[in-house]
Length: 322
Image: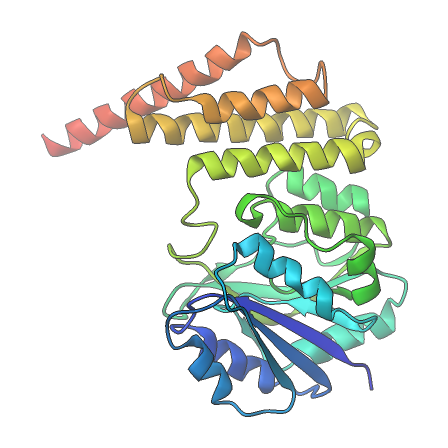
């Protein structure tokens, strides 16, 4: 029987971790081991985890506060050649998740990354919508274009891969707060073979304001995006510039995030004086991919568009109050 290793990094996850662990221990495919990497939690996380008293569970404690990057980096110490997955402490596996993955591996042994369809749930566990994915086989080019076109729901939870491949990729890239790091990791893993997406649902991903990505500052998002651009230059430069179509999608992807950061800055500060977050991303892309973006004057156009959107929204709000 195929063995799986499941890694659960957590800090102060008492609100959701019990449901998460229960969903893992309730798998119909029972040959797995769960590693809980606790980041010096100050709430009841450890007490809850220890209450399960299951020999398939190992709790790895930290006696000092770690960054989220440092805690996730510890995963590499416990990786074997077995298939593995990483789950957020607030997410839930359906009982057949590992069985579905096992079937995918049997059908597609040469693939390097596997995932099932999934639902997005809120803090209360209510389904918000289904995740957007392309079912079936996805090669690197297809997966990359889905990311660039922003038509893919992809998070840290749900992907399964070989431990040996995870080591080969040196684990998850240590971007700030791990934002965009999962995209980089899964692109690297897909490059080793292909991605296979099951047509069946196998897990739920929880979205709430207290999640790491949901609570990240704009400067953190900007810094992480710069790291992602550097990654793309170092690992996928030829793939991004292989065709005019892919180059155009990459250009639109960067411009989207620059505009998004500008808008967020403007809504937060009501000023054009604090737009360095977008400018830093634009500059990083210009340095790594010269000629891809419009001239530097275009940065002012991005800010102009963002400022117009801000003023338009303010006008709509004022009219609604009349």
